[in-house]
Image (cartoon, rainbow, N blue to C red):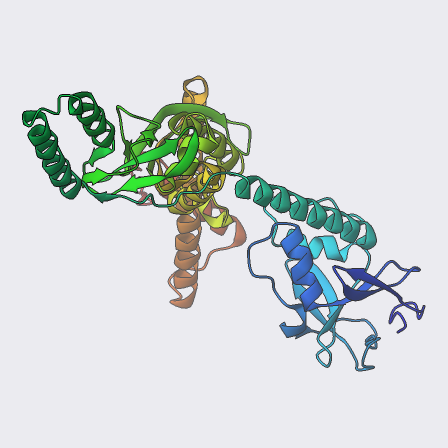
Length: 429
């Protein structure tokens, strides 16, 4: 294949075993959509990519280029400031030097600096390798931890009935003169009685035998398990109920560096009791610290507020989307602790006290400017309508000086903050 721009033979390179063409002269790259999605995945882009080969073509004052793959004439497509060559025959796209970064900046939250195409692909390959390594290490870490499984238990009332029968047998032996049975019977009954466990609804016990995890006891009722099994939390069973975490207000800088106060409520529950007990030291404290960390990571990605016509997400205007991302971020952080995040919502959002007054003044100034803008636009349209009506109906003929004076008077009257007092001239005296 030859470069359609400089006619130099393209060098075949690979990104995750997918080939693409690279021109060593003009630094352009020729690739198809699958490799674009692979690069997007390595960059952490979750939004669906636009396929340049499926976009509408535009007309430009430039000689058309020939597709290096199938030989068809390529067309220009435009989106968000990027103009690239695409072939509708083989669905390939030609990116001139630097255009590949511009293409992905369309989908990135924080745009990247414009660099050479091959350097950009090299950075994406490094990011992909780093992501794979982190996922692999995370998987090894999680697999090396404990996982919950159910312990074998028997209905406690059946065992209790058996112990009552056994106690009666020991008592009969004692009455028949078998005094030796007393210590044996008492020890036996005490040993078997140690296996009784009682749980209320939405409670669980993590059991160990000589330090080894043997399972989790769940289900409300009266149970009997291995008498050697001991609960890790003997006095307070693990609650499986939905609970609420409120860490109070946090002072965090938003994307623009403005200090703001943010408070969140996290609704959570214990999903894997073994992970919650053995994988972390204190799962409630672990959740609290991870929630603070996730909140800071999310808040730093967005401004407190954004203009309505900017189409930018903000903490104040997109609370539902921010809450969903916050929930996902916390869930990812506490997965190792076996916790399930039911919901995470922002309950308090305000500028920090030290800048609240200044921000309020800025908002008031912006509101005044918007109002004045609307008034001026309306006044200009009314003046234009008045002049057109006077001219169309041939009511009065005004020269340029009289028109300017009339425009001035009307604008002053319509844009004034106070009600104008009319002055009538009758031409007498």
